[in-house]
Image (cartoon, rainbow, N blue to C red; front, side):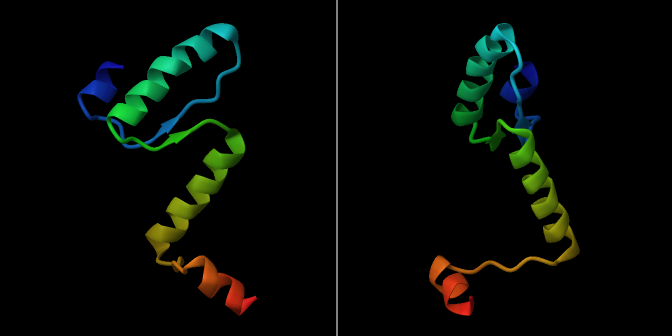
Length: 73
């Protein structure tokens, strides 16, 4: 939590597995919202985010509106 409060975190991936981690997760989620930090709660979403970050770094990503995307398919 100290690192979050010192703005040393750019992305939070938290996949709670027990009652205690779910309880701790509340504080982490609250801090993510308070400090506008993206927050991921599932392994699937974390993998998708990692793929997107990698594609962005390589310049292999384009951004389209939903209308543009559906018009192409």
